[in-house]
Length: 579
Image (cartoon, rainbow, N blue to C red):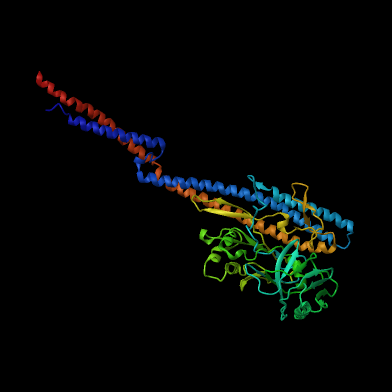
């Protein structure tokens, strides 16, 4: 018998400690309901379940994000619903004003209502917001840095468009030897040449100058030694162009003596546009004019297309010849009709804007094209092509050629605008638990100017004075549609139909996005539920099984306590030997 080491007691104590520890773990799991309370319970299971917990919480937050997105969309769509109502009322009063039973005073009363309603559309666009974010006024315009590279202009008459014009704009190329033209409109100059382009029409490359009067367009030659000869060739070219087109033939006459060329609408109709002139200059862009469809009196034709095109400025035409200037174009662009074209760098990722993206990297490649300007026009033509309804873009001998393809549609207004890209209000909704799981939304400018129902005072189709405010003050900075005449009211109906279609398109887009978000919320709820179930299978404890384990461990602990008492009594037996 030994007394220094009571091995049975030591063994029993160890078992008691194990059973007590297991019992404590059972109590911990039963009290928390979790199988894993610390990493030691299941290291791998803890790591997996924590990742799942992050996903579940992310999915739940994404669902709330989507609900906030729906609230934003409903705010914007609700405002556009009122804009729709206003446009319908404006169309109604335009229709009323077009009726021949109205007096001038009646139409003026209708015009006053038109002005007020247009200002209200501006107010809605300027004040509609969600969480302090303006929703219906876009987010500003990205302007070009440095020299302008494009020219503003309409490819067709917006009021009663029954013509088609082909425009060629040169970017970054120097003028060839010979005379060129400079348009002077609204105090801004555009150096150009022109070519007639009627079917089988003779070319006319001579430098001339327009001077538009009430019912004729006078082309006056700048003083040169061969002015008479050049004017004669121009008269012949214009006559050939008109006679070659059955719809123009008989509608216009070309006359003049010496250095003058005068084009007159036979029935006395007026040419649209303000007075202007063209003078001789040094650098050149090229514009080619032509017509298709019906050329009616009172509509703009090729001969006064300079007024319809309303060119503003094309300065420093060689500005596109350096990489530095091309780099400045990133984030800017131009607009044709309602379609925006925006420059971006492909090296920084795919184009994410709402327009048509033109990768500026293509134009920066060395050795691909003859000049940087050629590279730019090639990149634009390749990217855009015929993606814009009503026009096609091609590259021809360093020229960006913009050709109107639709004629004879009343009210068609295809406009080429310089100065940057008008940005829409853009946001994104985080609708997933992870990076990159978002949904983008853009809302276009829905104010009067963007809808095409305000313009410059005195322009065709608009009031002679500014009559429209921005809705937040009394400053009148825009001109409303002119319905003070029967003809103007009739033309305004078509413009209002287009504006209504724009708002309808925007509301349709918002509605589709809202429906998508609602489906997203349902999907997120299902995903969260399923992932929670998976996480529960890893992390939660089986209460019945754990109670069984706890009962077993509790019995073993109590038994170990009793056995430890017995083991401690065994060494005392040696004392019997001393008696």
